[in-house]
Every structure is written in structure tokens, then in C-alpha cells.
Length: 460
Image 1 (cartoon, rainbow, N blue to C red):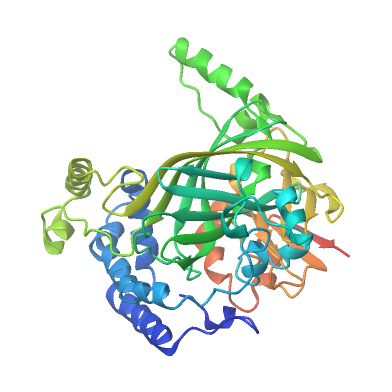
Image 2: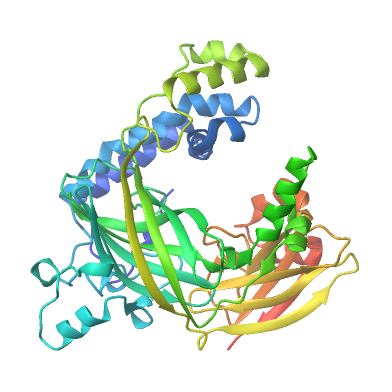
């Protein structure tokens, strides 16, 4: 549920109509599907076959479209109430426009630099951009495919993550788009990424944070976790191919990844060839998934019958692909960019821990950037990384939220990080018993008592 407290001083104020519709929609969601239903609905929407977990999801299937339908009650107001719009030019100022709205930090305008430096210099000198109406750049940073133009605006690289701002302009109006948990349009991009420091191409689905400026223009920010891009696993792929050729089973776990993969240091300067192959949005008013059976009939089925009915309905209706026309709109590319990136390590602090418990599990280091903190775990040869789960608390003992991608990276936004407390918990114990107490008073005491490893780290 969205928190009204997220609106910062100086932020634009939504109209009363928008606010009232928003509150009515949240109440409808709670009434129809209950507190946990949206999560269950999301699981089934994204991958019904692989995420299905028994009877408790049957009820989620029945209620999954209620949340989306409720959100659609007020989604139309977003286009009529552009509460985020300002008089700032777009190129070179997207981070500034979105100040306070990004989940992984603030003050990006103090760090980000324009990708099209020539256009930025022209503006500062009173000249004109090379793009339309002096507002969008051209050439290498602006590509048009099938009536949709993508313009890359700014970048900031901390060495741990890369943040890129972009503008998407469509000749046809965007379809009404579902709002995510932060009240922003749910939009993602499929990418192919080639880094000059890594010989292997990286394929990803990156979710954007952003806003519609009008019916034809979207502006936002994509975050790329470089800790997920700095591994050369060509050795792993060779081992997999060898096992397949010999008819052998090859199970990949954390230990196998460590054995057959090589970590690569992110250089201070590198080139990223970014290919955005698809732009995908979640429909505000998706189709209703139906098996042809009533809720009572589904509930009465055995798990085997339920799985069969669901699979047949998904396959026949095309629900199990992503994107699909029932739940998504999308634009096919590709939009290709060659970006020269400078990694700023001057603002990075690394606290070396290098300690383990008696079971061979511990922390090697904790890295802090202006926007995130990343925990680097350490295990001996006999200990499995998958058996542990990291938890990070701020100086006041509050849980720090994962930014997305890796559970080892959390956002520093709204946290005092002069001191952080890092824990490794037994994975099953954390998921089954401890996780539910994350937001309760005394959680730090619980972590001190139950965690398998703990470290206190101080930063400037």
C-alpha cells in the first residue's frame, strides 16, 4: 500500500479528484483481495507455471484481476493530472525533475552528467541543441524505430551500479498503464548489453522508474546492477555444454558458479553498447484470466487437476508468454546506443570485515556509494552460500530495503548509515520465522540473538 508520507516538501500536490480516486481504489483492493492477494496475483501473472505453489494460490488466481481492475479506476486521472510536470528542459535534467521520487536515492543531479556533452555545452553557451525544438538530442543518443523515439539523457556510475535517464516519445498515445507500488507506471525494457570489460553479452529485463509527461511522452531512469554484470561465465557455459554432450546432469549452484566463473573488476572508464529490444508496459485494465470453471469448482479440484486446468488455459490463451496481449502493451525495437561511461569511485567507501563464523560463513566487505550499500559475503569451501540470507540495518536498527536485483544491495535513502549492522541468517529460519518481524520494534535484538553471523560497520 502506498504511503502518503513519501511525498516530500516542495513536491507537486495531486488534485483532490486524483487523491480521492486513489484512496477509493486502495480500499477496493483491500476489500476484494485482502492484504496478501496482490503479491499472489503478481506471482501468477509473471509466471504461473514456475511460481505455482499449491492450493493457497488458487484463491489468488480468482482475485488477481480485482487489484488491477481497482487500479484502473483512477489510472485515467494520471493523464489528466500531470502532477510531476515542471518547466525544466528534458535533456540533461531528468534526474533533477525526479528529485525525491527514485527509490534508490536522491541528489542524482549532483552526480549525473549528460551523455550528449556537446548538446549540453551548446545549451550552456546559449546555442541550440541538434534535436527537435532544442529539447531532445540527436544522433548517437536519439534513435527512432517504428514511430517511437528513445533518447538517452544522463548517466551516473558508482562502480556498483549504473543509472541512466531516458525519454520515450511515441507517435501514438501510450495505452493506460498500471501503477506500481510507488505510484509510477509499470514499464520495463528488454535489453542486450555488451560491456567493454566483459566478453559476454548480458541479457536483462530492467524495470524503469519514471512518469508520463503527457499521453505521448514518458521519462524515467533505469538502474543496472553492475555487480550482476562483472562475471565472465564462459567457463561455466563450456562445462554445461560438455555435460550435455556426455548426457550428464549438470546442476548449477553458487559453488559451481564460483568455481567456473571469473569476477571482473569494473574499470573507471568503459563502453556500454546498449540495445533496447522491447519496451513493455503493464495494462491498467488487463483481461480477466478464465479457465471456464467457477471459483468453487477450482477450489474443489485436487492440486493435479488444478495444475492441468491452469496449464491448458494458459497455453491456449497465450497467457504464459511475456509480454502478452492480455496483460501488456509493448513496442518492438531495437534502439541501439554506444555509451561511454565514467565510474566514480571517489565517493565509494569500502569497509573490510574479513571475518567468518565457526561454520565458515561471514562477510568480506561492505561497500557504500552515495545511493546504496552492498554486502560481499564470504564462505569457505564446505559452506553453501544458498543456506544464508543477508540482512542490513541502519544506525537506528531499521531494516534497509533491497533496491532490486540482488539481496546484497540496499538503498541508503531515508537511512542514517553512519553505522550499519550486517547479519547472515539461516535462509529457511529467516524466511519462515524472522522475516515477518522486519518492521516490528526489537527486530535488531531478534537479529542479535538469532543471526548466524553479525558485524557492525562504521562509515564517515
